[in-house]
Length: 322
Length: 266
Image 1 (cartoon, rainbow over the protein chains, first blue to last red):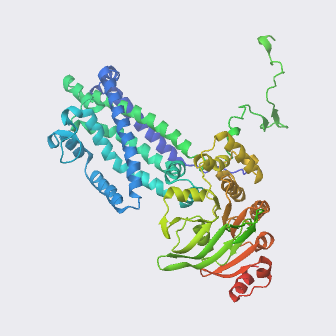
Image 2: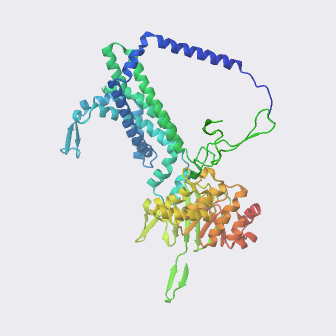
Image 3: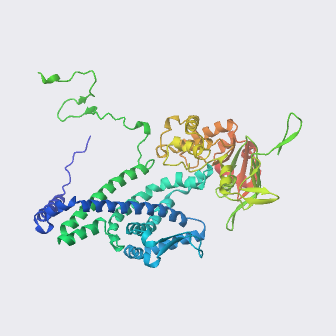
């Protein structure tokens, strides 16, 4: 017998919601009509070639530097957990330097690298180098921007990965060891896949953060990414606001895609945990999508029964002829 | 040591499966094992019992070198564990060699320690593929056979989180057996289980014992010890207090500490 009770009313919720909707709509309407936003210009520049190329460059900066940062971060995290005190302190020192100084300052210093080291020599120290490059020739500003972003990010990734590794139960390592698996097999097959569940959400955060941090590479100076590019265009047109909106729309577009990607990665690495439903691989996709069963209908003496459509049943009204 | 007369008449010495000689283990100043000397024959089922903190689990973990001995010698199937001996000197083993020794020693843990991101079948298949490098198709067939043997053929594609404790522990036993070990170590395999699930795990272990597997079982299940074990060892405070025939020790313990312990658990 279902409980019949008069629902508790929440009048203030309603008032509040209406108020917020009114404020939101009026802000939107106001913005649409305000000439300073110059919406026609937004539309004109949104798919401007220079802007879309800059958007691709921004994406490249993000992807390259994040990939390097994740690899370096894993290495640093494993170093920090190493029993060797020298290796451990070295990783700690790296973190101290790269996490302790602003990324803008680091990028500026990287931009001046050719003043500090005019050539890159490969060889044995204090001997004639085997190969020698001029720093300016070897490192483009694009490369320097990636190095600067990646090395800074690696320090943060190292802490994220370390937290993930520590979150895996010690018994897992023991079980793998007892089976005769080597340390690297234990890491790659048992520990790392499980730590992914802990590592991915904050890493997704870092990717989104990196996408926006790329706007700082103007310090290198590298000027072909989204923000600097739109600033440069507006410097010619003397109309900065629509171009800032254009850049923001592109950033929002990319972060939205990244959020969707993160959702699927999280789902993938949460397999085996987090859900309590029997999850046999061969049981996937057995639902027919047809509603069957008994549905109670109000005021009808008997429950109506919905049967699944049968193959051999003739259509109720073939050809639409009565 | 067992002396066997071969048909040629020559006497060949077959080493016992496990031989521990004055094995000691300390964690800092805490001496957990004090000069343990034990022998486990081939095909023998030995139960290790005793109060918590008596060192039984530590001793078990020394056998597959999860713990490093502080003193003494321990060999499995005539091979020294964790060290190489040459010219009267001991050399510490490289991790790779230690891993090779562990392949032949199966271990079952109190908390199952199944890999949660793999299905039951993948758990069983992992080590034969990665460690032994066997072809996948062959491993899959024998893994399915093993799961059938522990009564879990239907559950092959379930993740551990969707299995009961007893089912998880049976998968863990199948996982250890997949490496075709010559020795199985059980570290309180039923202590983390609901009472109603203990039986199914013990049944699998009984079957394994019948098949002739050499087993060392740390347990609180005296009924199992009485029924299945060939020998029973009672440990307390890091020493072997009493060892011998299970029936005799359980019905007529000689030592006062054994009497006190058994009066509480039986």
